Image 1: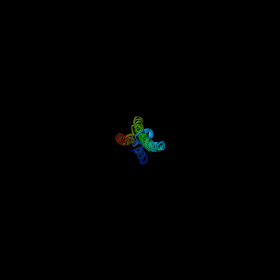
Image 2 (image 1 turned 90 degrees about the vertical axis):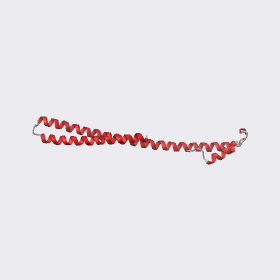
Image 3 (image 1 turned 30 degrees about the vertical axis):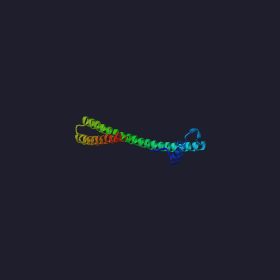
Image 4 (image 1 turned 180 degrees about the vertical axis):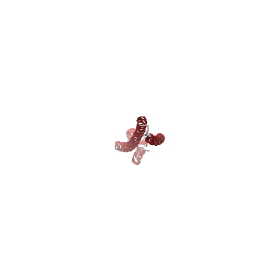
Length: 132
C-alpha cells in the first residue's frame, strides 16, 4: 500500500526539479508536507482499523475455544460421576447389575463424545495455527 497521494506526487515533482532547495517556494513545500501528513494519517487509520478487526477476530476465537474447553470439562465430569455412581451401586447392591451395565454404557458413550469433541478441538487448533 502506498501512502503517497496523487497530489503529493505532483508536489514531489515540483520539489525535485528545483536546483537549489533554498529556492523552493515555502507555500509549495507546506502543501507537499500537508499532503504527505494526510496520506500518512489515512494509512495509520487504515492500519489501526485492520489491527482492531484482527484483534476482535482473535478474541472471538479465544472465547470459542474457552467455551469448547468448558463443554469438554463438563463431559469428562459427567463421565467420571457416572463411573463413581456405578461403582458405588455395584458395591452396595449386588442386584443392581442391570443399572451398572446401563451406567457403564452411558459412561462409554459420554467418553466417545468427549473424545470426538477433543479431536475436533485439536483440528480447530491446527487450523488456527495455520491461519495465524
